[in-house]
Length: 206
Image 1 (cartoon, rainbow, N blue to C red):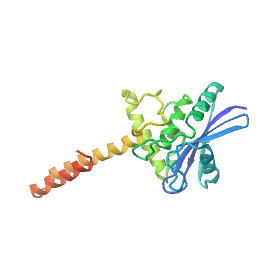
Image 2: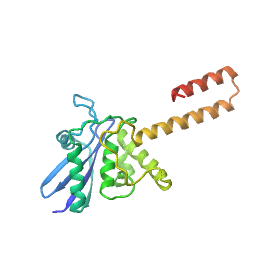
Image 3: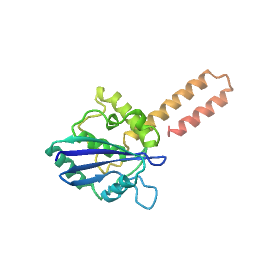
Image 4: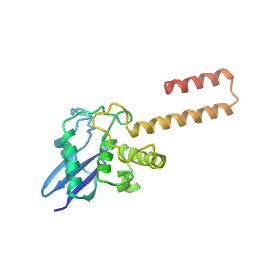
């Protein structure tokens, strides 16, 4: 039986979720970086919890790729090494289910972003689909100039921020630039212009 890696897009709720199932010869293991807002701790890599989320989903889209035994064993070993760990979770700042899933996608040897597996229509709805599209856009733009190394896996316990964190910073910066340009063209009192610019700088900690 062929070894497979399945990318699960769970479109339930406002946020949604993604995780990964590996399977071979009757063996299967599902893992992801949890984003449950209930009693389950944020950022835990729990195979039982993630399997339950797939089982209970009422709006699930799955994309499966076939890998050789060597790649399967490498990913399985990685799953086992992070299972039970807890990350500094964050939709924007921290690592999240998209970062984890992209790590596994790169480990399969595939190029680009795992969002490529899904159509734009399939990504519509929950926030996770929007973040996947934005992460793909950023990576597609950055990869040719060497900003993102295709072979660099995100570790399970990085206390920085993931690619989605970079997206929100970029959006804020562009918003501030736009506001500044609008202010420059306005004909209001100079004191109002200075006040709005000060608020814009404070919004990004500048």
